[in-house]
Each structure stands twice: as C-alpha cells, then as structure tokens.
Length: 451
Image (tube, rainbow, N blue to C red):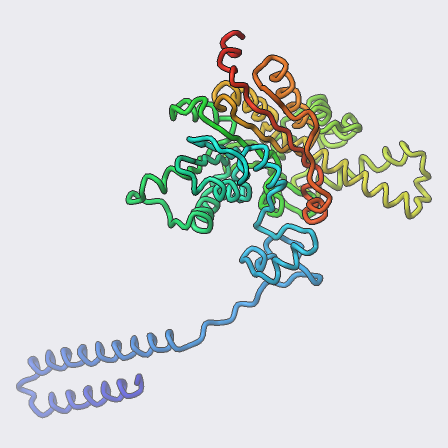
C-alpha cells in the first residue's frame, strides 16, 4: 500500500511540472495548484501509512514474555510463586498437601473452636440482634465463616478491623463476592448490603473509640481477636517479617510510611534498651549478649532480615555451644541438628521482639483488653482471643482471670484450647496457637459502676 501511494505521488508531481511548463503565463496560479495537490497526495500517503501501521499492530502477535526463572524445582521467593497467588488449583492443592500455606493466602486457625466459644455454631442459640466483631480481618478466613453463620439471621452484622490499607480492600471485595454474592458497595446499594458487613481500616486498639463514635457501646455479642501474623505478610519478602528469605528490615504491619521501621528502631535504641526489649518481648535468655553484639560498638547495623539473622547466629552460636559443654571443634550430627534448631529459635525470638516493638503490639493488646468489658461487649457477650507467644498469652490470661475474680466476667476458660493434632499437621503455623475465652457478666454494668 505504501509503495502504491509513493508511485501516485511521483506521477502527480511530474504531471504538475509538465502542466506548469506548458502554460508559463499561469505560473503563479499553477504553482499554488501544484502545492495544494502535493499536500493532498501527501495527506493521502500518510493516511495509508497510518492504516498499514494500525493493521500491523492488530495482526502482529505480541512478543512472548518469559517468566522469571528460579533455582530448584519449586519457587522459594514470594514473587516467583505467581501460580499460587493466581489461585492455580493444582499448585494450591500441592502446597496444601505438604502442610504449607499457599502464597498470598491465609489458612484460619481453629475455626470450629472459635465459632463454638463465640456462640455461633448451628446448634447454639443466637442473640437477636447480633453484632459480631473480628478485630483482625487479614485474609478474611475467620470472617468468611462468621458471615456464613450470620448471613441468614434477621438482624445480624459483622464489623471487621484491619490496619493494612492494601489488604483490607482486597479482602472486603473478595468476601462480598464469594460469601455474600455482592458486587462492590456503591451509593445505590441497599441498606442491608451495607450493614451486614463493615470493614474498618483501623487498628483494633481504636475499637472502643469506634464503638463510642458510632453509638454502639456495649452492643457487641461476640468478639474475635486473632493476634497472629497474616500469612500474606510473612510470605512477602518486602515486608521483612521472615529471616528465611532476604528482605528489608521493615516489619511494619500497616502501610503507613511515616511509622518507624525495624532498622530505624535499631538505630535509635541504646544497648540497655534493646536488652530490656528482648527480655520483655520474647523472654530471650541471651538478651544482653545479642543487644551488645547488634548495636554495642555502633558499627554497621543490619539493614536486611538475613543480615540480622546472620549476625544473631554468629553471636548465639558460641553461647549455645558453651551452654551444652560441647566441643566447638567436634560437633556431632545430633548436636549440629540441635544447634541449628536452637539458633533458629533464637533468631525467631529476636525478630519477634523487634516486631512487637515496631508495631506496639503489647500496648495495643492491653488497650483492647481494657475496652472489651467497658465499651464493647454486651451483657453475656463472648470474647475469643488467639495468642501465639507467651507475652500475649500472659496478658490475656491475667485480664480474664482478674475480670472473673472481680465479677466482670461470669466465666472464663482456665484451660487453654489448642489446635488438634490433625490441624497442627495440616497447618504447621497453628502449632504455637492458644485460644482463650470469656463471657461478660450480666451484672457487668453494676460491677463497673462500683469500681
């Protein structure tokens, strides 16, 4: 097409030149005609060229983009696990069969037990009206089961909190579509669509203030708080929550860039402060040595998770060997295995202590425990809390026990509830989980007034 257009242009130009030579008296007018004709032909040529380009763009196949290669049979880096994140059924089934959690997903822990102690099982009498709070929405695992239990009730609602502004939008959309069969909430949505499920982008420390501002103080019939880390955060290297894959030393649970990162925290702390933090947040026995080894000489502070892990490993290794009276020059096979296990546990405790401080997790939990009986639960309301380490569990146990002794709670679970062997095998991340529960006294209003 382009060659034909060029030929037409050449013929037109030659004819115009001959016409001008034959009639010199009409030179000025013919010159203008020639310019107009040349412009018209040029425009036509450009039009045909554009058509050719358009046809080529629509007919030519797009260049194939090869997937990024990774070493080994299965991907280890979060960004390489695209099949899991896209929900490929075969890949997800393989991951689950190994007792692992697919990347970008979260397997809820002790679902049946949570529903039971929240009073939401099918065979349990339900409150009317029913207002349920999930303090940690995350991937929406527990919330999806809660919604299924309440969605057919005449007057039931779920309010779910999460401080991660990125994940909460994804989860809300997924739950509305998969569980409730709703599309996104718009101005035209019915009041029923809006009320049955509300996602609140706030930390659960603000639960009491939220209930006050919305005139719902003392109206919650069931509350769940899963204090564990979301699997999406653990698996994502960029969040800096795991030492098994390299990532920035971040550890912030929210997407607020103004908050202090783990690296910035280590830069600010003094040795005695870090030592105290390691003891209080994770019961670390080598707190003094690790604190001095990390920031004592004010040398290069680790900037990534694996740098931190390597540094802690170097500090703790001789201490553990000395503790067992092993010969450092002749470590046996069983000793090496035990040494690795202890080193991994030490690194995990150090990262746990730093993460707790970065996110103020104990302060947030204590605020929640304070607000539950005074601003949140209705008389006879049920609270269930899942904890994952001793620091959390001690605080929950102390709050429930003292509340029972003072008459705030009518009953509480003295014996901790743990996942079954089957669940621990299928979901290893549930192994350290403990469930504690309590029921608010019907006379709680009088008790709180007397205190």
